[in-house]
Image (cartoon, rainbow, N blue to C red; front, side, top):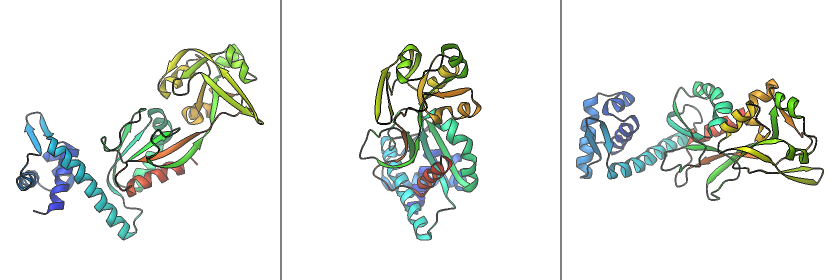
Length: 291
């Protein structure tokens, strides 16, 4: 039994959830998959999978073997790509994690271009506003905004976005347009909990801080978007979050002669393993589309 091939078969079984799925992915018959797994378990002298009417479930040993085997396969693939000097022809599966709203507005509409450039590549997009553990979730690259909580993370800054105070044209017509930051205290604010209700502005070396009042607070950007679009008030947000509405004029910036801190977008990679060519290519792609 080829050791590397057996590892590949096991990883594909876990990824697809079945022997038939792995057989289809690899291009062999299902009996060959079943035989390989049986031989692998016999060689390791441990049970890797529990078979039941509900499907296949990895044992604790199976989970540990999968995690190690997946890394070994990735590193072998990387070694081949490096030897070939290949930056194209990527294949296999790429797992990407990104904040829901950012991915929906800025990445997913352009994703067909990336898939077209790499027809042998499959992409899993995990939409989650939380900072999740990349290793345990099997993530190859995460797109994260703002300051990185973990200074030891393998990360690369790929874009810097502008922050603005925004509101709908209807809200501004009804409640007036603030002329200086202090005017915001008289307006209803839509508060993003990660930023809080204390907003700091700068202009020509002068700093102005204002504490806004808002009856609604949201933990995710999608809530901010919907609240602003519903004419509920003003919000501080990255321009990425309202890109379509800012272009159409349905949402407008105010206090444009005052500056808010920019927001950085990072490509974050799991620690403890090589950064894959697939992950690097995706980071380059996102960097390009945001230029």
